[in-house]
Image (cartoon, rainbow, N blue to C red; front, top):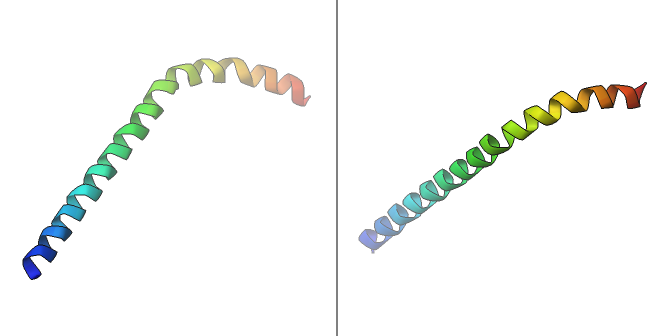
Amino acid sequence: MEETYLEDTCWQITFSSLSFVLSLSLSLAHNLRPEKSRKKRQRSQPAAGRKVRQ
């Protein structure tokens, strides 16, 4: 019983760590890709935003 329990916990730990790494890599990939477009948008948006606010 103890051996199977240890194996289950090991699998749970490896699975959780793998899913954590996957989610991290996905979020990093999503963050890195739009940065180029975000910079372009940020340059053009503030002027329009200021005009609208005034």
